[in-house]
Length: 78
Image 1 (cartoon, rainbow, N blue to C red):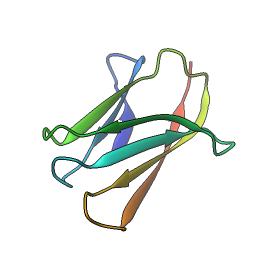
Image 2: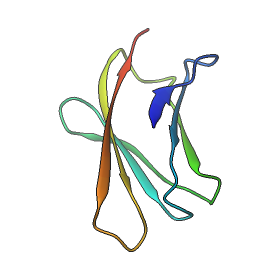
Image 3: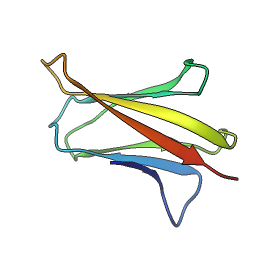
Image 4: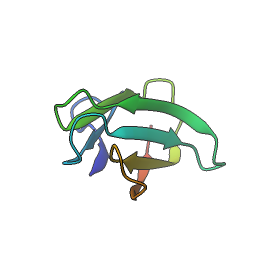
């Protein structure tokens, strides 16, 4: 599940159950990599969205040791 944080629009939160070491990448609509993070074991990754403009973003989540990916589309409105 990926969503803008309802109380803090400058945070984009990704929650998952893939375990520690899951990699999360954030892309803009042009397919450019904006940011990437690894989960430290809490089941969520938070991106700083303060510099992102309104638009559609793609979040790709990959579990460690697996080629399977989950894709989420997120709309940010400013």
